[in-house]
Length: 367
Image (cartoon, rainbow, N blue to C red; front, top):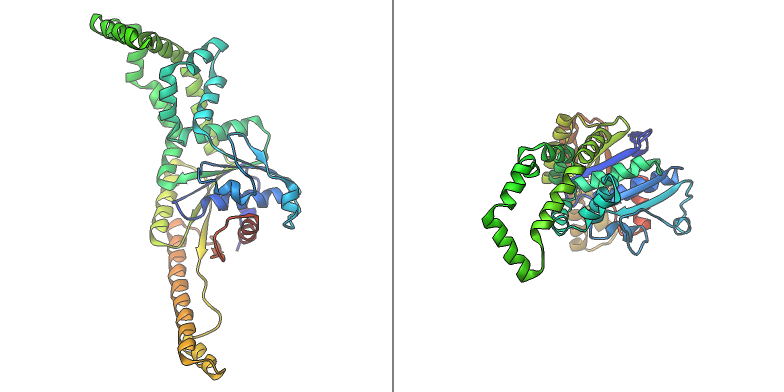
């Protein structure tokens, strides 16, 4: 069975996708740890606000810029770090602001947009969806060229479809008729400067001290200067996702709903022409190798164990074999549906992955 190291050989971007609760965040961190230990400079990017990534890497907190994981901390766990491991947690609002700053043609435009009250409200709403800001940050990190590999932990798979569509949706927005109507003088000017509207804004200004009319005018004037930059960035982001050096790994568990999500997302990946790098089936129950439950019961009784205790142990063996059989069936279903004859199967670990020791166990299973 080939591991993740072979799947990621030569890749510069790895997008980890799947339904919620299957271990995407810890899988992303374990993959990044494995690649970094092998000699590459790797950054893992998460959008998980639960701080699981920071805690598992021994970091108090993560911000919107990558932080290096202390090599000495990893060395204390027996990890010979030949490369570098960095981590960050996406701040959608800060990323969107940074995108405006990068695309603004001059300092005045940048200040007009970032300081505009309408932009501040709209950017919080748009950035809150996370999808476009995630790929925008991914593009910036890739374009800046500071890392050999970027590993991105995505939202649950239904939201990850928005992630795939984000560049096209942004382009559609800027090319849409509604926005063009607002930006042409006869559109926004006609609406704002109408006598009735002007009276309303005048009253609001006297009551609140806020010149809303001026805010709207400044916002749309500045936005018109950013349209070409936004469209170019959206095209560049889309090209990065479709690049041969970008791959998607789908993570699932053997349960019914995550399996269905994995099959669904794989189909959408194929429709979008994105590269499917492989399937990771996490938290798989494996059959107990102690033998037939009744034989185990008889053996324990023969060793002098009370029949009640022997029966409970035998029942545990039977339950484990049943779960293992169910999981094996799920894996076969995934193999057939995804045309993936060799998925990466990770046996259920003892306890949740919450620290570096847990990440190392997961890394060994993956790599």
